[in-house]
Amino acid sequence: MTLRLGFATLAFVAFAAQAQAFEISSPSVSDGKWDAKYLGDKAGCGGRSVSIALAWKDPPAGTKSYALTMFDTDANGGKGFWHWLAWNIPASAKGLSEGAGAQGGKRMPKGSVLGKGGSDRAGYFGPCPPPGSGEHHYVFTLYALSEKTLRIPADPLPEMVSVAAKSSALGQATVTYTYGR
Image (cartoon, rainbow, N blue to C red):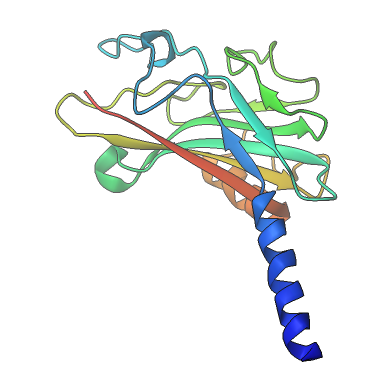
């Protein structure tokens, strides 16, 4: 009898922990609808590459900083495309305001670093799938890190940022939005 009660208690504790899971979301995008300002600013994309607002909650205990990636899993014949990389975001941050990913990083929290993605510039580059290529999946991953400063070389490749963030992560939160034209 005591053994069964113990398992029931453990199951309840596990369920309660899942109810407060680390989460990321955006009030800027819903149901695949992106305002034109969030789309890529290269010729033919129709946007201004204003980064979407992001909010997160319930990070793992011991989080000392965050790293953020935005990756289009469907671009380049399935090889993907990095749209946004940021790291050393302070643990006190609860999100990023609209436009925080602008080149130069002036709207990012103090100490944050913007990396170069596939557009070869530091900062956010909005969705810009080729016409007729179907819906693309834009995966935003926020890593809760166990260290204040991500240990990577200067001007790292996007894959280096991703690997370093995964290796230092206490947890990660992911949200995927779609867009096609």
